[in-house]
Image (cartoon, rainbow, N blue to C red; front, side, top):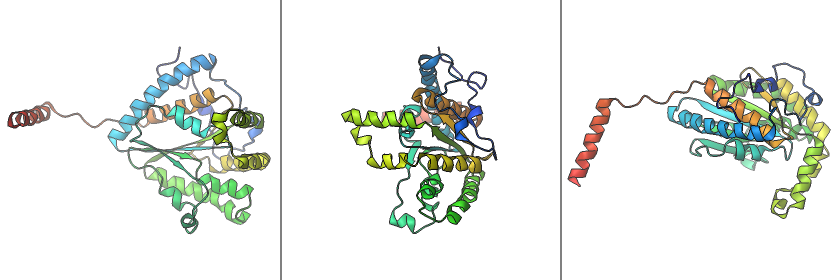
Length: 289
């Protein structure tokens, strides 16, 4: 049976957080592990249902209070599950207060500006949760691996990104960054599934095979991202993502705990006198109608 209120004692997902300045070797992280779900998939899915209900209530309060901003960054190799997290973790939340922003190849207009220009426009407003499906980190990942700009250019961006995220947090944004960690074999199986199931063919992109051939280069780029941009104000979490249900459990738990720690308060209810006055006005409408 799932827990009504997940706690670090039962689900210490904070251990997936990368400490600032820590040397990162992704070979030290098992993408298939499920250590904090001893009851297995069935129990975890029960807990996920409860976490989802908590998230719905917390998101509604966040929207109503109109004070906090929350940014969730999802990064990972192709097939790592970014879309799946959005569908499953945020299932049932009110779309009025949750928005997804995806960052693909920059448009000509975006290329005419600095690389953070298009990103800043998508950051959350008060009361809003925004999910970045890929993000500004593409400018130190894809750009680096494919040598789209000189090394001297992308190397400066780690410090620039840290400063940008510090600005957001200083202005009231809470940032959670998740690297969805899968291994090459798991990616291969997911790509084959897309080929073998006609209803999933549309998800297969031949370009994914070219990116897959650069796996080692991407892992090195991700290690540098995790090492250089996990900060006290915007931490990275390395999420084991081979098991989709465990991936969702880790992210849901961290998200719910983070929102709980914001101590969100609903606006004060109306006084008895105000309610009586509103009722009186509505009654007058009935009589005049």
